[in-house]
Length: 126
Length: 132
Image 1 (tube, rainbow over the protein chains, first blue to last red):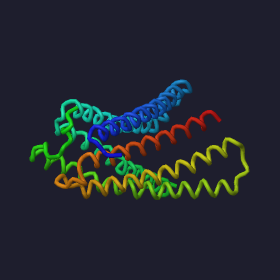
Image 2: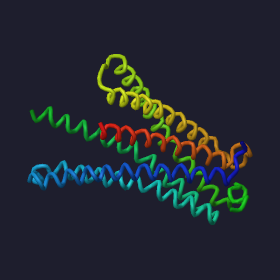
Image 3: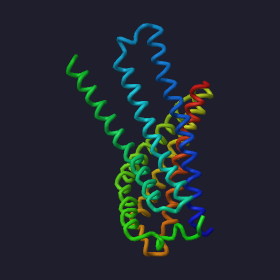
Image 4: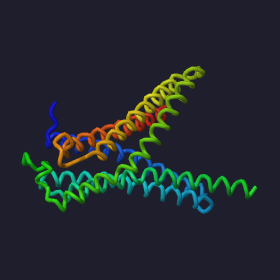
């Protein structure tokens, strides 16, 4: 089948929309987990002792929410491009996509760094 | 939508330059992700396969291992699609008819399709694990 511009942009919008919906479901689960941890902390009065882990959970969930927001921005720009045909919108869409793909290896590296630092801390503190 | 909106010749030269730069900037990050995805995917395939051979557990474990196997396959597929998109971004040339913007967008939509499938597999695994 011949690739037409309309088909290509419509397909891209459809699949990006589906990814955003699925990532929103994942975010709901993630925030549900974080809220559950906080409520349990209140309930068993352990919030004061576990505040570092709760802060890590909230930070991680907020960062994940921001990363999931990037493809949404890209999708909005693509829809504007579909309506107006302004190349600046297409450039913005590609930029937001790049930020999304960039964030994953950076977070992976941060996670590895955090993991190795905590292991070193455990080794030297014992 | 105007038939020629995506025609690269309609894009003014200053836009064309910055758009081209933006398209090419993604290469490095997607290459890293493709390599990571391939390594994790193949490891997941091997782990799930080896547990299949030795595990005599419950039906849920069997289903989860099967889903883990599928997820590994999806990750390998994702890294292949990411590699293909990286290649088309690298060789994207607005002047050549065979490498026009619509072909790049088509490859980009394939990448998002693979990402959606990956999320779908992951969420179904979470769902099965929660129900068990």
